[in-house]
Image (cartoon, rainbow, N blue to C red; front, top):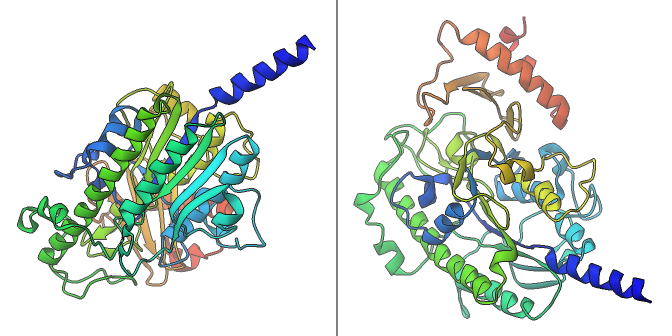
Length: 434
């Protein structure tokens, strides 16, 4: 009898000790729209506080897309743990295995969702114990009869935290803001924080033609920097509005005594370009669009550590499993970052980074160099990211570029085998395979 009591007590302590997991995800937010990442005077004090209290990655990539709604591939990979082209085959009846949410439920977690759901596979109602508002990928308006959807999502998250504080089991809270995705509607006071004529644009935003090989450009030619300033203004205003709600979520965790035993992750599904490199949109492989913020804080995680090695946003799936002590299935393609995070290690996670969009864009990044390919156009761009972070100096015509490109393409072909990418890159660029 005593043995049974001890066992029950141990189980209760173990369950209580499990950290809560709060995953906050924004939509279409680049690194340039987080104050802690240091581009401009973007007001995100609460997101910045997470970076200061934890580890933040500056080179976290979304692997790519098969849809002009880039969030669908990004979130499908995130919740299913498989690479781009395997994720593209997922539907309600064809899934690689239990989702991240289901695995956490199997490990004793109470799960709750509020916000945007835009991932293929099982639905929110099939995979979460509880849910609030389930919003579409594209809102017609943020202004509902019950208020602004950013406020609604934030308030629902706070209500769940207040309820969860009365229970003993750990929880997984997924807060999926639509912001700052279009239609970028918010209160005037947030727009007023960012006077349009004071908006700083990256040096890669230049008046002139749009990129000739990018299909989905959400502006008319010629590209107008003043128009892009307006979009930055709207975007930053939406982000600051969202940051206020994130602050209320963090405050609720602290008020209820849950903050110290919670792993909090802030991320976006991908970035977006507002004129950089002649692109106004997100269906491109330049860093401003392909990367997004990734921040994690919690018990035992070092504070204020900026890590610059390249990795994938979707590495969060196995990372969460690793942090809660759950098994990581062999079929999961992405890598756990737990060791990297706990040690604030600057060692590489990947030897190289593979990126792909549809059948008309491919990229490989290794060392200082990034190669972007447009197979249909038989065109390519080569950048030295160490010297040229805005990707404005295309080195493809330089005399020594062929050797570099050949090496990158050898690495790219290995990634094609790894990911099941069937595009014939040799047909598009035979000169590099002689």
